Amino acid sequence: MATISMKKDIDWKPRRKSLQVRVRDMYIGSDNPVAIQSMTNTDTGEVNSTVAQIIELHKAGSELVRFTVQNLKMARAVVDIRKTLDDLGYNIPLIGDFHYNGHQLLREVPSCADALDKYRINPGNVGFGDKHDDNFKSILDVAKDHDKPVRIGVNWGSLDQTVLTKMMDDNTRSAVKKSAEDIMVEAVVESAVQSVNKAIEYGVEPNRIIVSTKISEVSKMVKAYQMLAARIEQPLHLGLTEAGIGSKGVASSSAALSLLLTQGIGDTIRVSLTPTPGSSRAEEVNVCRQILQSLDIRHFSPLVTSCPGCGRTTSTTFQEMAQDLTGYLQERMPEWKSAGYEGVEEMKVAVMGCVVNGPGESRMAQIGISLPGSGENPSCLIYEDGKQVAAVKADVARAEFKKHLESYVTAHYSKKA
Ligand code: SF4
Image (cartoon, rainbow, N blue to C red):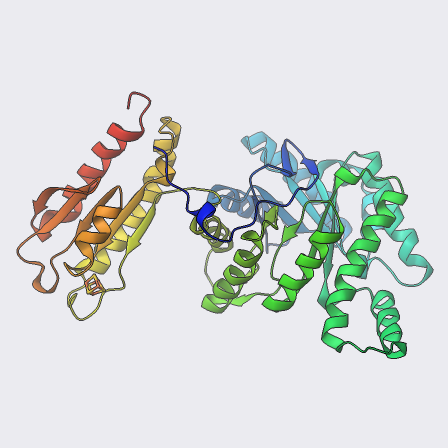
């Protein structure tokens, strides 16, 4: 079922033109869908737990997974991680995150260099003085030898001090002085651009490079990517680094990524949440998907519109129903997709607490249910395509709504529909 896009009616810039970079069997940049990435927090040297988390992230929707490679044990484990995933049928691209000793690890363990699908290089952490360029070139030589793309990932927490110091000195001598914060942002961008130019000078093809400039403050991060987008043609990996825990991390990442994506900037994204103890690492993938879906950039599973509830929803019936139906849709999606139900991920579902806004929202969704409010009497109204199709008692409302949902999906999204 086609949906109406509102993007043309708002100030929404077209996607920035960028090169297309191949990573394993997928492509990033140009007109390819904005890809979702995540990063493990297991010990990469522990193959079983790392494989389990990669699969968890992948099942949640992560299209590429990165992990740290910081010593020989981890570098050797990468080969087993790749093999185990291949044996289990997971073709997911794997990215090695290198700092300080990537040039040594990739040389010492060529099978690791081969097993990885992309190397992340932080130009601020490849060595200092004369060693900086030698180590940087050494990693790039390995990438060329193994035909792997790289991400030049600048992070303001580990910014190349040579670039920053020079720009600070230039500012001191300049007649028109900029703030230290502005110089910092410009230095992040300059470090990325210089590194891209150097990589190309060392023989890396321009379409084998992805770039990021991660900063932990929204406005500065957005500014850095805007500047970067105007200066290079490589695909950009977006992320607000160290976004934080809980709602702070979700809100600030959503704000930062949305501002850039609506300006057409961004080819891959990651949300760097600090997980709450015991929570799933996959939450960062869920947030990525919700951001892309909320912006109508990609669709993954039906969106549920539900009101916050108020004094008119005095029981927990409405909250339980909204939670249950949201979970039900997510559970059913894999089966609907494998049955070839095209476009079901774009279906809009409403679950509303009372008659104030319930019937209106339910009519605007493809399918919706509106509870009556306090006491849940006399009945819950079910709507399909703007028309009321049933009125059911509260105690059977969930089951009845699911029946309507299933027949609606079959009637509208199956191949026969
Ligand atoms: S739709 Fe009804 S229950 Fe929901 S927030 Fe509005 S008034 Fe409250």
